[in-house]
Every structure is written in C-alpha cells, then in structure tokens.
Length: 539
Image 1: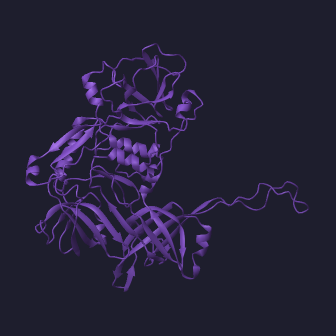
Image 2: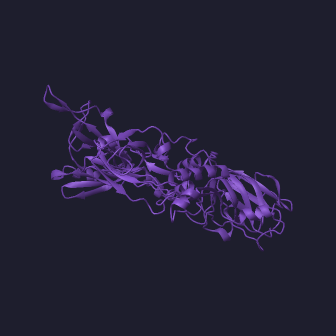
Image 3: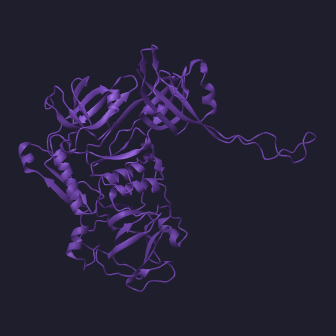
C-alpha cells in the first residue's frame, strides 16, 4: 500500500513590543514594558494522503487530497536550455476550518516543501498495515511553496522547483554619471559590464570620454591583447593601482584591475574602435576556466543563488564538459538567470534540470548506444501502455551536418573605414564573422534522405576549435541517425528508481524494440491521481 507524505516549512512572523512605556501610577516612570517580544519562529507542518506515523511517533494526518503534478525533461534541441518545470498544486483538506488559524497567522511564501513516497507492509500476524521508517521514504519532489490559497473546505499551495531561482534578474550596479569610475553623462543608468571566462574581441565601455577610460568588467580581468580597429598599435604601459593617478604615455595604455572591476586608460585619443581579448574572473577572485564551471560560479556569485540548490554531483570542476570558454555581457540590458544559462549551455547538449531532492543538476544527453549499462530493463510485463511521440521537425529526419561555433566574436568588424589600414588579413578575417565553426558531416545521411536536416551554425561559449569539434561529433552521433521517442507508462515505484539522462533497456511489441533496444530517459510525468508514471524514452 503506497502513500505520500508532505512537509511544509512555515514561519510565525515576529511581533515586537514598544521599547518603553511611560506609566503613571501603576509602574515606575520609564520602565520597560512587561509584555514579551515574540521573535520569528519556524515550524514544520506534516501531512499525508493516507495517514502515517514515524518510528518516533510523529503523526502525518491524512489531509492531502492532491499531492503532485510533476513534469521534467531534458533538452533535445541543441541550441536551447530546455527542461520542463515541475510546477504543481498541493491541496490540503480543511474540514470545518481546522487549518484556518494556520492560514491566517503563518507565512509559507517561498519556504521549503518536501514530498516523499513510501510503502506500507501487511503484518499477517497482527492483521494490520505497518508504517515504514521515515528514512526509507523515497524523495518525489523538493522545492518551495507559494502563498496559501484558501478554498471551500480546502487550502492549496502552488509548488515551485529550484528553477525558480533562474527567473530573477542578475543583480548589478549602474553608472551614476558623477565622473571618474562612476562614468560620465554618456553612460548614466547603464549597467556595468561583466566578463566571465575567456572572450574574444569585446568592446569595453567608454565611461570617461575626456580621459579615454574604458571599463571591461565589474571584476578582475586579464587583457591578453588590445586592438585599435583590429590592429595592435597601442602598447601596454603597465598595471596601476589608480587609473587616474597619471596619464599614460602617448601610444600606450595602463590597466587597473581589482575586485571592484577592470579599467584601461589610453594615452592618446583613438582613431578607430577599441576592442580587447580578455579573460575575466569573478569579484571574489574565483577563476573557473571551463564553461560549465563558469556557469556554476555565475549562479552562486552573480545570481546569488544559495549553494544548497546546486546538486552535489555538480562539483566546482566538472568533468561533464571540461572545455574552456566564457561570455561578455556589455551592460546594455538586464540579464536573467535563464538567459545566462541558455547562453552558456547553448550548443553543448546539456540540460539544467531540477532533481527530486530540490537541487539543480546539469545532464548531458548521450547517444543511447554509448550510455553504458542500463539502469533498468523495461519489458512488456512492466509496461502498462506505450505510444509514439513525435520528434521535433528539426531532429527528424536526421541531420547530415552539425556546425558548432567557437571563439565567439563579440564585435563584428568588416573591411572599411572602421578598420585600421594596417590590420592583418588574418585579424580581418577573424573579426569579420561572429563565429567560427567546427563541422561534423555524413554524406551518407545526405544521400539517404531527400531533405535531411541541416541546422544553422550554433553559437556557443567555447573558446577552442578542438573542443567544438568534439561537441559537433556528439551531436552527429546522436542525431545523425533516425531516432524515435516512446512514451512508456510504468508503475510509479519503478519510475522512482531511475532519473533523467540514465540508460534503460526497452523491450516492447513496437517496431524496432521487440528484441530490446538501448534507450535514454528524456522526460517523466507523474500525477497523484495515477499509479503510473509516464517515461519518455529516446531510442
């Protein structure tokens, strides 16, 4: 007999009394109030859908009428973040208003909510159902709840998963226009630029047009090259602790870099546009080089997401995609966490999805044939229903070519009056295009299909050609052959044994799978009203 438990964190807001009461006749003059202060206190509400008592005799009353409607998925298209959000509604019965006092006095907005599932065992000797230990309950969902939504004899709580943190705008500072490092009147209200990792040919922000001072980032950075119109004709004049202490010599530039930002100052007014190649670090001094590691630090430090929401498997240095890169945000517009994730994961075949434990985890979509031993074998005796799911038209028919960009050029400069006449042909060729591409192709696929897919070049945050070539090969192995999606209904307790991105063996009476075929779990959907979970399998 299966059941689910719910734990909700709630807060009783603080109540503070006045500092003093000037009494006349009843207490001494100026005496402190005799009424106590009530600081904010946290409590945990515990409920279940069928009643449950822990081994420590903690009850979970059967008030839950609707526990979950969960959907999660991986990205299939290569140029998007993907990953469905596990949004649902938790509904509690409220007979005769027994919960009214809690609803009116307690706050549950954006506080933790945890759902677990367990199985009761039948005790034949005593002829009763026995409750399992709390430690044996399996996590189904962990996230946050929104405000109470009272109804007729019920109360509902909207559920949010860890991707809620990505909705927020990345905190930043803006120029006030008061002069010097606060910028002049030309940049008033503009956000300060941000450089994280390696970036090519970025345009620093001119913040002081009288003294030729440019800002590269809001944190420390190293300038590997400075160009005027694509030509290196301004030499490095040294690093300084105060960019305004002295004007650089003509034809040189000085650099000031610290935890507050990175600036350059020119000794001569430039004729052509100024761009730099640079490597940016975080304000804390953290200097991850690989794209996925940059994203992890970005979420924690720039987006200010609590590190507890980063899954333990996502370590500071990840081996999932160990390739260097980075990105530059010039401050011309606000950036949300979702936009940053999409930018840094674009083209890598990685989804950032919420786990059942309430954390965010990056998962790379693998070729089913190379994903390793199956975690679970799904055979006809376990499958209650199976149906085909249409692939996106960009993935079916197969793609005969994949072009993955690398060393993104942040400032496109074409031949003409904007380029220095001495700019080399190699440099002109580099900065004339926004991306250079690494290519995977298979002419056999092109010959086998009348109109095979041929995706456009995908911009990535990768810095090296060899790494982009590996990623292009990943896409070719995955989508250079005909793929199928199957929606498979299996018992919920079985579905909890496997997670997104893990390999399975699918054996079912459908074309191509009758004798068994390797597959990858790419999505799941479960509801409290059903005893089965729908897994979508890519084969």
